[in-house]
Amino acid sequence: MAACATVVTLLLGIPLSYVLARKNFRGKEIIDLIVTIPMVLPPVVTGYILILLIGRNQLLGRISFALTGHRVGLMFTWYAAVIAAFAVSFPFMVKTARASMEMIDQELINASYMLGRSEFQTALRVVFPLSRGGITAGATLAFARAIGEFGATIMVAGNLVGKTNTMPLSIYSATGDGNWSGAAWMVLALVGLSGAVMYVSNRLSRKAKTA
Image (cartoon, rainbow, N blue to C red; front, side):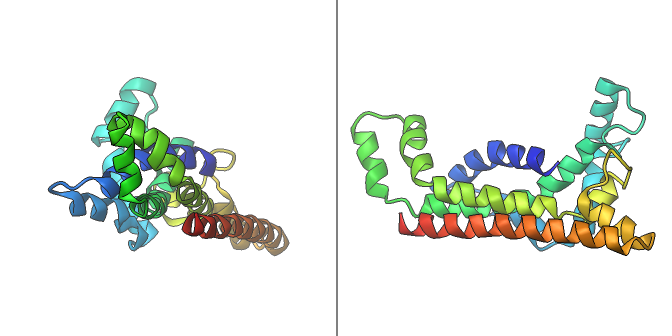
């Protein structure tokens, strides 16, 4: 679920980061606020907002029901867990990638335009390659945040064994059932994985700053 959320985060986050970093337009700060506000909201609040968007009687929920016939639409499916993970991890990707793109020397971009490159070609051949450290660091941060997501996931996806029970939810269930040893092993695995991801992210961030 975290991997799927990270893929969607990359596909949507890179172009949005470019727009926020390189463009000036009315409403830019409002878009930035909407994108980043999940970073400060309690995850349960984010989950509640998602229910209003993908619930059975909401627009996205009705579309899902029409396409799949699932009686609860997107709710309580692994798709909902991916959406929850995406919602809380997306800001980390956008903030990191945007900062990296904003640090690119404007003279390099102007030189690309002088050589006859279009804005799209310049973005592909200049902006994105020079920002790859920040983009990769943002993706790893988003992946780490998605792995640890709990509040929004349990609101929209529940804790269905074999379907939506992510590792944090499984730890919660194990401790509730008194299975402390099982919970401890999952905690160790999660701490180790999260630590490895954060180490890679920090390395990539330092490389991006010195590039």
